[in-house]
Image (cartoon, rainbow, N blue to C red; front, side, top):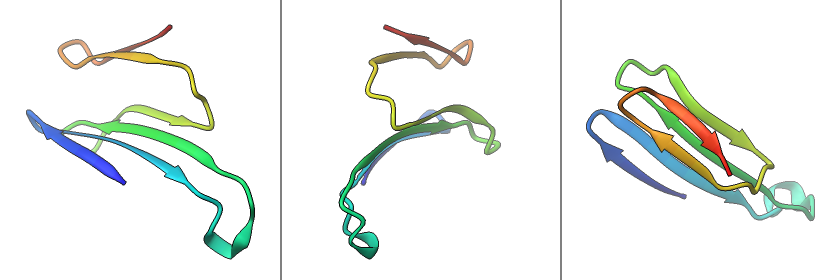
Length: 62
């Protein structure tokens, strides 16, 4: 798991490798939360590229 704290935001990405209970599949997850714990972005099992504007808390999908 990787994450970055940026001006009171937490941004991260995880790729579950299927090792939990030997389930055999992977699920990509990306997330961003603001300093108050509010969700800015949560993406599960979606590989599309996103652009995150932290000033207006808007997410664009490419």
